[in-house]
Length: 341
Ligand code: COA
Image 1 (cartoon, rainbow, N blue to C red):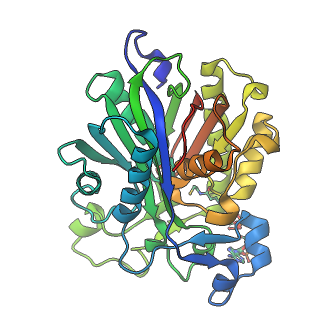
Image 2: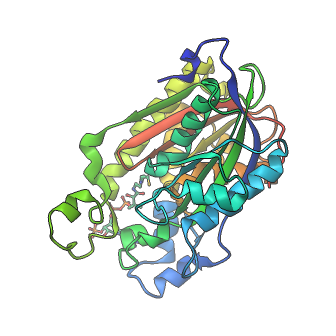
């Protein structure tokens, strides 16, 4: 699916605000080494991560989403959004969706609000959904939030995942605009392969296990990932989707000023950038400080890069993500003149 296929006359979603939030609590590699069979050297060299943020007891995804969403609204100014799309892997509860509560707490009660479930590709899927609401005339302003309290589903005793994931959220505000404006979203490329759903999963807690009448097996309530196999698919899918989005935008690799890939693993990021021929210095990264924050990864990265000045107005930005589902995506846009909050 490419957004460039939309009718020329249709309104286009334009990014006009961005915000992010991470919980205060920082967990360093040294903290993990104290309780897991691992080393700081292994974590840094195999993942590129030195520390990550973790929600304190009792904090939920909605708390992160409210903070990030509120900041994005401050960044945007302008009229209140009439829709809220929340990408998350870790909803507050299995039912109902978390977005309506987030909308109400931000002061957007009455707005359309729903969750998008696409694991680490959630932000790009939610961006596409929000852009579609604008293109169809259903909404004029959309708040797209991506938030995960990933540490709440990670097995603290699993060294293969506990060292990677952290918590965080990012959000953008979309307004109705023109396709040739900076910030106009698109082209967007999305894809999935459900045959490989078992590579990344939480087995228990859904209708499959509940209808069996059997309790969850040991550890089945936790997130499991077959890391080595996932690694290969991540590089292949993010490279291919990025190529497709860049081609649809009419960009060669040399035209890409900034590359923002889902912060899955430092080695994956380097491999994808190299595969695409994008110089390493154009690849944005914050994985060393925040780890893999799931759906929130890309908007958190963009907000931090915009605040620090490494992402600036006029930059041709290529984004890509990959995760459970399997689901992946990529999107191209020219970064607008927005102040990150
Ligand atoms: N500390 C020390 N050793 C560890 C470890 C840790 N934290 N985690 C795993 N190991 C060990 C394994 O047990 C294994 O030991 P063995 O050879 O004795 O069996 C060895 O390191 C290699 O394991 P492997 O899983 O092949 O490591 P890896 O280099 O692939 O790194 C990941 C593991 C998870 C970091 C990596 O596979 C990864 O990032 N995968 C993709 C993640 C991703 O893209 N997810 C999708 C988006 S969320």
